[in-house]
Length: 587
Image (cartoon, rainbow, N blue to C red; front, side, top):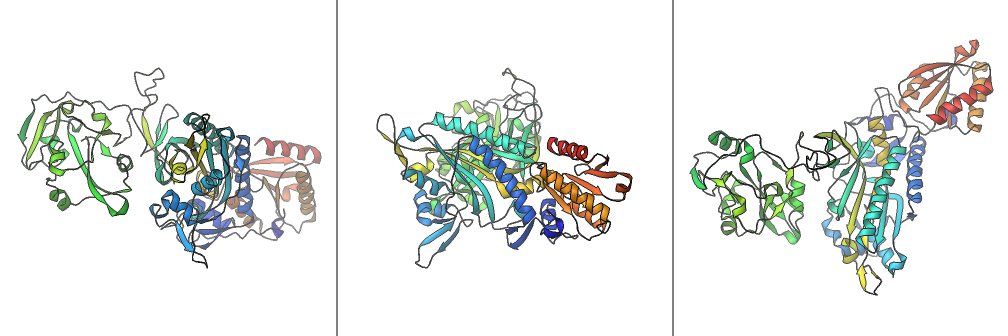
């Protein structure tokens, strides 16, 4: 392709209100153009890069045995009403009516549509498993779209849905998709981690996210320094934490603790570490139809509550809110002195949860539900009917649950640390959440109707363009990975008025194209400096400069990755083309 005939509107200045380098460079490099809040046009360079990503995803999905479909972007609201998500999804779901006053939505995801499709066509276990996927437009009405393609309202996504007769086969497909996604992100040239994650609004269990590691990532992920373990904070676990001191020995008793309201004050008062204290965190849970209730969480004073884990502990809850001191006192409690003793009798609450690391915990100090008093010598084994959940947020330095456990054969002493990542893919074991709600069943071996067991697998195709650049750029511009670059090489003619330079560049351009190399020939009348600046901004893997050195039989090869330069001899033209072809194809 000739630069002079190709639509590449590049800009020197960064657009206003741009935070991420990927957002700046994709606009400045003529890849995308914003036409509305969170809505972008893909220009020719952007479309080529998008197609490269799409093709890799399609090849790997097809190789995994999935079937590509194209589902309607506009979805009847009745399908979402069947699943119960029409109201629960929130304002991000764009709802509208047609001229006949029928309700529709713009699909941010297609569980309902594909379930209805399979319901109408699958009758028997003999037709399973089945995996359908699409690469198509989505729309999510983000309240604050930002960061360019990273958090757009309109976006392109690969969403796949699998259907199974049993959980074992779902797990097999889930594992297959994990390995398939790993191949996809490896082929894209990305440094990534597959991490355990929360299922969020999609639902289900067995969720994993594929995080592209980047300092600019919105998500904090927890990874091990010795093995491949990784998880989002809301799904991260650890080896059960041990104390750094001996347990405080005391018979069970109520102790006068005037004005001791915080964990720090309690530790100072008793000269103990926070590990031996019991902390109460009170939240207000929101349920369907506006119902609310106070919820009580207990964990060690040295730990922090992870709110996503806390929300997941409460069946039917949709959201957790902070609680005022007045609301706590209206429940008959005193802030700073809340404890588990008689709590259910005082509050009549069915929502009392303990972190699972507190099972069989002894020698604790906790609030006595009375101003200026705490209990010492608390033994949770003496309680009946306690409900234990994973509530704690892991901390840096905690031991890895995979290789940090001394009791396991693969012990490496791995410790957890935090890093930033960009979510680029997510896979779920949905189970029967949607099939049960929408009455999508099949007949098993015994002729009994059972709900289809589902999996869900997504990749943010357009978001990946931003993720690639966030991981691969410098102060001059983008650095595309070889498999995602719009072109492999840019041939830069230093001075197009020099006939010898243009003749050689044209000959090299045609020869490389014939050899299967995607080339961009910069034949513009621009200054040499402007051409080099555009080459560095656009970020193709290689540049070839045809300039004054041609008089000495030399051209210059530039590697965009590190801007290193190499002088090449041109006397044997065929040998030059073959050597360049080998460099490009092996890169």
